Each structure stands twice: as structure tokens, then as C-alpha cells.
Length: 278
Image (cartoon, rainbow, N blue to C red; front, side, top):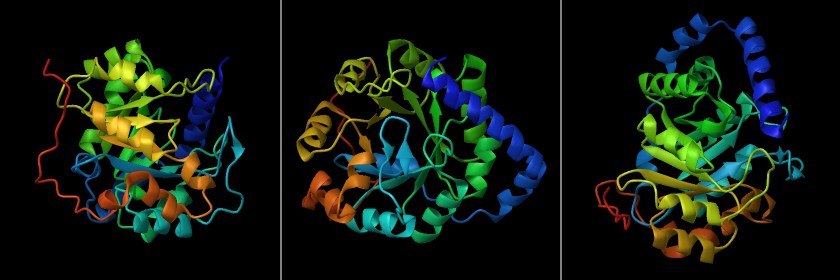
């Protein structure tokens, strides 16, 4: 049993427990109380490369990342530094996250927020919507084809954007089969937790122009971000490097560059995509 299998199994068990505590119909009744929309995808396609700054307390591979981290302080620093969006880990067993962290981020920041978790049931998408998420992560390797299609359509029905995450060619084929419009390429193999940053460049060539591409895992320098921008990646998700930084605000500024930190994120300006049409 791989670590991914363990995390997915834990997610399924946790969802069953939460459904007993708060039935789906109660969540659905709360959807009318959602706050104003914060379009997530639009934040990723602004001119230049966009940064999704992640809050996570620990990980299975790294252990505790920032002991005593205050989510209010961290997300405020990310926003001041010029991040385009936030990612908040809500998975409890391996990452120490919670829906409380998601709600706190929503209350403290005006940025659009991704709920990052092992989403295996439509119930979690309703949770995401009710607790302040504007987008959710769908990990292809954690789902079969029917589950992936159902979750993608459920997210659309709830007006929640998705990052459909892939790691290899087979994952990518499945993501394209459901016509995912935002594709995340995770350089970390979730079965071994080994990171290979060449994964993004390898898979990018098979992604049709017009798709929004997010690079994930293994990035910590401005030079890497510039390289991603040159090859046509739209956004980069960075967590551990920012969470370990003594000054997260300054770390964001250094990663995206001062000129990008002060730019206006206008969705009206065209975004150049160097990938050929297919």
C-alpha cells in the first residue's frame, strides 16, 4: 500500500465521519450563505506567471514545516507580497490541516483560495464551497474515471474552479478526457514522494494550447519561476519554501519579482501562450 493509498483511504473514512456529523442536505442549505465570488482561474491567467502561495503545517515527507504557524499572519504576508491566489491544506492526518484553516484564510485575505485535499467525494466539494474555497484540487491518481468525471461536474455545478492534478502521461490523458481546463503538473510522485522538476517540462508539450497550466512542487527560486514563464506555464504553486522563509512576504516578492508584485492582475490583457495549437 503506497502513501497515496493510505492518504486516500484516510480521506474516505474521514468523509464518512463528517457526513454523519453534518449531513449533505445541511451543507446544501448553507450554500445560499456563500460570500461573493472570487474567480480563481482568472487569477492564474493574468499577464506573467502567477503565484499560488500555499499554507501547510506539515507534510508526510517533510514533517513539521513551521511550528506554531499563524494562518492569519501567513496569508496576510502572502497577499502583501503579491501572490495571485492562496492554497490551503485541509487534510488532517498527513498535513495537519483543517476546514478551520480554510475559513480563517477566507476571513483574512481577499485572494481566491484553493482547497487542497484528497477530494474523493462530492460532499467535500460542498464543504469547500460552504467554508470559503473558490477552487478545489482533484488528484487524478487518487480517483477512478467515473469518480473523476463526477467530481469535476459537481465542482462546475457549484461554481467551484478545479485544478486537475497529473503526474505522468496516463494521468494527463485522463485529465484531457474530461476536458479539464486547469491542469496541475505535480513534480512529486505521490507514491514515493520523490520530486523531479523535469516532469513539468516533459508533460507540458502534450497539453493543448488554451489550457491553464499550474506547476507544483520543487520550486524555490526566481530563476526557476522565470524558466517556467518562458516555457508557457501560467502559474506555480509553492508551499514549503514560503512556509520555511523567515519573512514570507519578502519571499513572495523575491520569487515573483518586484515588477510582477506591483502589476495589476487584469484579466482583460491577453496572456501569451507559446505552446502550439493542437
